Length: 231
Image: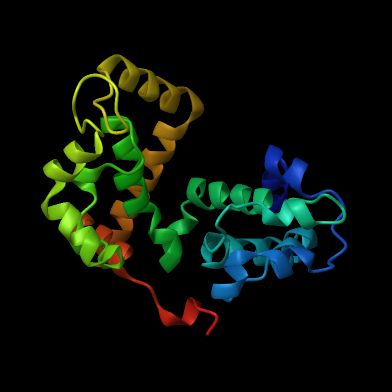
């Protein structure tokens, strides 16, 4: 038994998600991500079960563990009630904690994800906040999305969203007291520390690549190699 496996096995998600895998491949057959990426949950489960440090370290430094959409469709179909999705969540956490995530393209995307989504939650109370969701970063938003960005105030007023206003509404201003409670939750659960780990490791990688942290963040956000896709 390897030291990395010992550490991984302490995660409750592995204890709950890896019961008695029979390598039937049902998880790979049902997985939505496997349709688009060169991704096989069964292979990841097989590697974890080898308890081999070298193979597990390769997983932690690679792209595969970041393909999962965490939909947990695998759980609904597994005949032995395993949860490959939970095991992959545990691998992701370990990859970040050990600083291995910066070794892969998909892993490096943790910086823009952390900065944009989690900061939105802490600063505004929303995962996606209209004023920080820019068309130039999301061309897939389409021309309608571009128009909404350019006419934001009028659109949300017409919808009754009450953007940044006091009172009811889907995009109302969240009271500072509630934001403080969210920050306290992040602190207690370790999310704040996790953000700091991502930031510090990304900073070192940016320096290694000869970039500013902002340049590194933008590259991580934009970069998507075709080699990942199941074409």
